[in-house]
Length: 371
Length: 176
Image 1 (cartoon, rainbow over the protein chains, first blue to last red):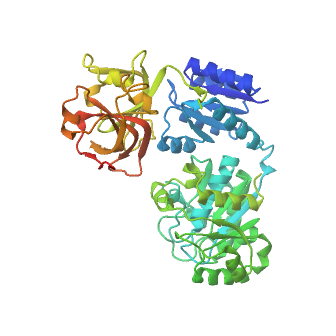
Image 2: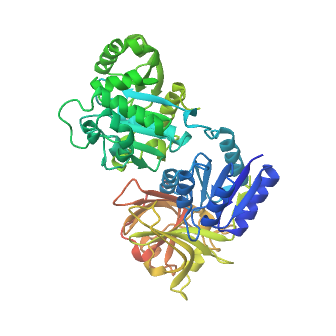
């Protein structure tokens, strides 16, 4: 039995949902007719799940959702947006605001009850301590253009949906990295000033260079203007990772396509390295070479086959024989990917059921960092 | 099989003007939405809980109002969830009006609409748009697309399109 908060300005609907959840679901239900009151009730006694309408006087359901996500007590709580605004653009808005699900009214009783029970069954337990989940994931390919940033961004968003506010995504590219673009952010601030700090000063300064994203992510962006040289030094990157680990549980690093000193520091410190490849001969050759170069860390390498072009791909089994390393996951082609980059909205946020996101979710599950 | 739906007496509707999406609830009482929109005695429609978004950012709510009036003549279309909500009472359950469906494409300012017209006989396009006394024409199983942002798509069981604002009106050929 769970405790469920329902926020909706329609008194008839509130009573119908109460009857459904109490009589058929066996749950305890707390009702609220408006956003401010609902937030106050959630803060006073955090529920196990919230069902929130969008169109309410005073405060929209999206704002309620955003504020619930900012509070540690409700940051991980499953939220269903139940709304008459049932278009795909509304689903995107709901997920961007931090909801786990978007359901369009009118909804059948069994659909709503099933969704509530599914979310309760799969919702993560609230972390008991900052150290409950901890890890660094480096996402890498030494061949450019294979979709490393797509994998890194969606991986971080998926982690953030499990542990909101406790994930940082770092773009280590010295040549105008695209993480900020994928997230619809302007890369200001970025990591460039960290290079001028002594490693010992980074811990105190790191928060000044992080940006927040509505997905529940902190972002350390790459500078928009490419830097001359290879970017941050090994010592600076190591100090940056140590500083970030004090603030967040998981750090996902989008690595450049050359093994710079900074990239090497991430490879050494990482708990998992996601090596991204595609099925074309050049990428496979580079992957073979990369596996040799990274042989010392082979036990933590998770090879991901990213299908970046439409159409049939060679069988993964055949490709595995070529690279002599098992694929941890295959990420299917998604035609909408180009479009969502231009919109600054990662697929993991707006289309979590897309095959691409499901592929990256399988990869995430295999890393074993976030329950 | 009848589904046990959770819904109440207020009908959620997405209204569109040239530049805005206005979501809200209409108290239809014993009428239907087409009855209200086509009622020549009233120029305005009362909306509860109006939520306003620009058409180019239709997911963002830029303003909310507990009550508002909408000038019916200035609406380009109204989008509803089910077919029945888009049909007037003489067109809905048990009616013989509309025995077959014809696919239609039409444009109104900022939007394109694809869907089906329910017709009772062979249709004269000019008569369809001019002679009928009803200002809003129901398009069933509608897909509404923003003309300047093609990725913005709205779907609904019914779209009530204001004839005054129709630019192009195209019927597909009949199968037989």
